[in-house]
Image 1 (cartoon, one colour):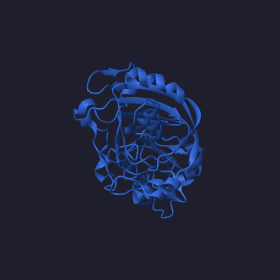
Image 2 (cartoon, helix red, strand yellow):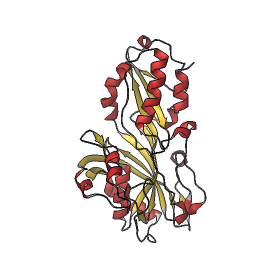
Image 3 (cartoon, rainbow, N blue to C red):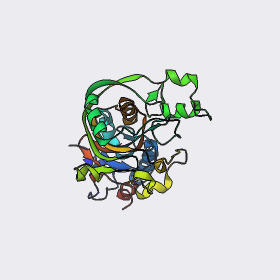
Image 4 (tube, rainbow, N blue to C red):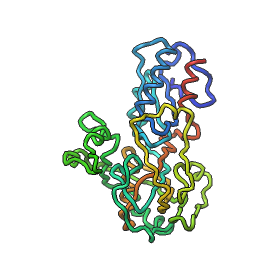
Length: 305
């Protein structure tokens, strides 16, 4: 018997965890500005109350950064033993990348620290640069990441080492190690060029996954679910959309352990500029796609009916 996999169409769970001897797997669309631990706490509280079992095991298979949304696999009961296997599966992401500026965190958690030339960045230039990133390679993870360093998440250490003047403490240099990753697919889904011409690539099904700011500061938005009202106040978000910098939306298929923010950094450098991530969605984790994932509210409702 296999673990029960929940979907938005699933029937409510029974009151006995014994009815699920192989455990439960819940693909959740992680809300924006939630940590993965925030999701686990919310689900675990509801599950313990529902099943009446205080020592119930609840965990996740693959951390998502606070400013990312998308598939987070939550495992309950015996299914927690599958977490390592589930985490090893390949992933797909849809990333919004802004060119012409960098931030210390490589995303919107920190303010811009440097500006770079960007007039030469075009949709064609981005597309031509992508093939060089296909295949196995070494990648230096961002300091502000979910990578574990001596049992502590790197982003927690980074926040402590981050100085008020925007620089990092010298101790930060020794924290992050190089990882071997594999990028198997890269595709430009959309490109917005410095408040001039915008190009939407001919891939509407993937473009529907686009999140983040619209070009030229026209009041963009981020796709959120209704649970965002309890987003962590510890997570800062900057808004650089009014700068009108060129922006690309890229789909990436890759191995476990790939940091898309680090890819954005490296892509900016490859194009003779700088870049940072302005949005990120994990659109697939193994066989699980975000279109079939539950919101946190839908998940909680499975435990309350």
